[in-house]
Image (cartoon, rainbow, N blue to C red; front, side, top):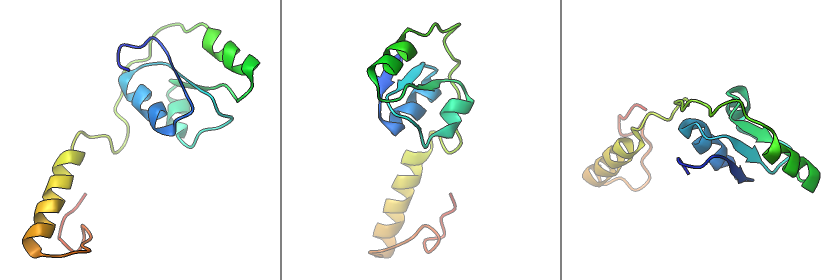
Length: 105
């Protein structure tokens, strides 16, 4: 996806991925729950009708958006998951929450 010139999708998760990668995205939906992708200008909702989708894909883009970091996308998720698994295994807790384990995220 990082080498794409444009991504066309109806997936909310891909909206954020393309924003982080700096890849323009056309969303085949009438709205998005990922407002930050609209604020950053990386995502263009096209609606669900053929003409709107074609127009959004053909819309000229001045330049490729710059990759950005979104809130909560800190490249630390894997570390937090591993720490939690180790803490749960070590303490023998079946239904442990991060706060019960003394983990702060």
